[in-house]
Amino acid sequence: MRISRVLTFILPLLCAAAAVPAAEDSLVIADFSAWMAKGIPPGWELKVKSGKAEFEVKRDGGIPALHLKSANSSYSLQGEVKVDVKQYPVLSWKWKATQLPQGGDFRKSKTDDQAAQLFVAFTKTKAIVYIWDSTAPQGLMESTSPVPFMTVKVVVVRSGPAELGKWITETRNVYEDYKKLYGNEPPVVSGLRLQINSQHTGTSAESWFADVAFKKQ
Image 1: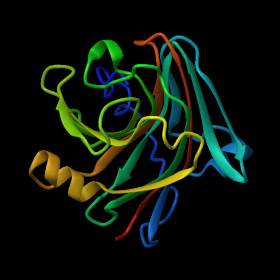
Image 2 (image 1 turned 135 degrees about the vertical axis):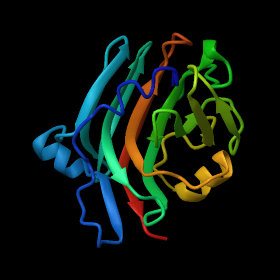
Image 3 (image 1 turned 90 degrees about the horizontal axis):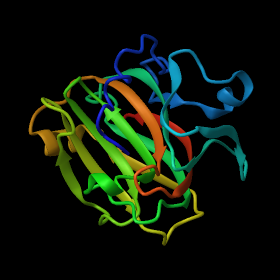
Image 4 (image 1 turned 180 degrees about the vertical axis):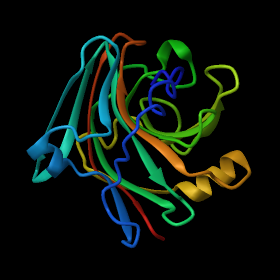
């Protein structure tokens, strides 16, 4: 995922991506049906860290989705969001991995590649990233400090190839995850990022994202 430098370009974005009024039961962060019609919305941008970005927004089995492919590359689509997770604690999304980077394992810098990463930034020094790793154990929660004075908490939501090719709906209580991982009350979420990479292992990866939203419990 190359967690290092992850916050250097998420947080400076100026436009909020949440599109649903606060009175609603959910805040839609990425409506890919709208992206299909109008392109990447204001407040979101493509960031390429290595190699070439290969992505498109299209329907997969009727699901409007973001399709990411990596061939020895690393890139993301990211935007600023403003979400109070005390009011909207549950992050919900759909994803599908169709190819995992061979030998990927976030626990070592030389193998730190994942087919799918959902990165939630709170401040310039604190973040949580939910990943689909190739080999690290599912359910593992581990800290990493890629640059001085910054801590990123990694949560392995899925691991390995057993569920390749299947759309999976995930829900995480980000409010509770933050309290468990950091030991205090979370600040407002300030950025979100969807990423793929395979440059450290020199392999390829492929994944899909859909229906990203924060919800009331």
